[in-house]
Length: 304
Image (cartoon, rainbow, N blue to C red):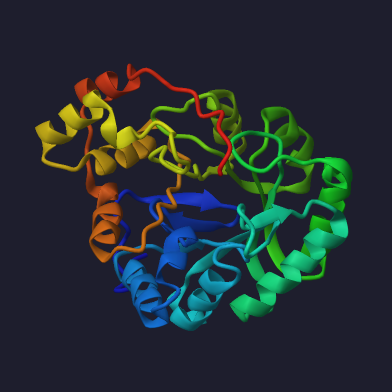
């Protein structure tokens, strides 16, 4: 529901035993507002007014800044489902400001850090960020940890009431299949119009009733990565329907599968308005066929 009680544009998606709006908010870019905490809080509240009832975050987003802004922006009455993640920790001052934290004791410590910065007694959903796929961090040495050991601590945290449900991030279909008995409610992998290597994963999630929450939904997460908004077919469809290329790229995801829940991030109020309007966009069969035929690209790059 929107903040005024009306149904969200685009409908809802099942997230475990909850129904969430199909367009939420990703908090990663809030770090850009770290020198204006009030602006970050205002942006989060505006997202809720526009219908976003779930927010994706992590302790390593701005070394706790995103979590603290979420804590100050929302009350329980706002009905916002917080979805955090563990598997990496902040590493401020380094060229890459996060480091792997895959060991069970690190996962538990990360959950505790998230609880503290969010000001919550329970985080509704916590994603286990594995390091099985690119782009992103790579596990080496003692950071190469068996999935069963990680799921054991995640389910223990759920049994203790510190997390409500378990999701996965940056995983392969085989890892998801192994994890299904633990009760997985969502998967976050890199996926967009230009990067569709995970169709098998998406089909598996659809079959299992698992929410699919693609990160970098416009493909521009890393320098040099292909950008959906620069594709000529996306631009042509956008011009034809009077929308922006970014809106078309996001709308394609919603039309592509019924269990997609978007978590687009921004630190800009105008971009927020445009993102939250995506649920209203209709793409006719001709537009979808043209977008479906867009050539996919390689995203096998590492952040600098």
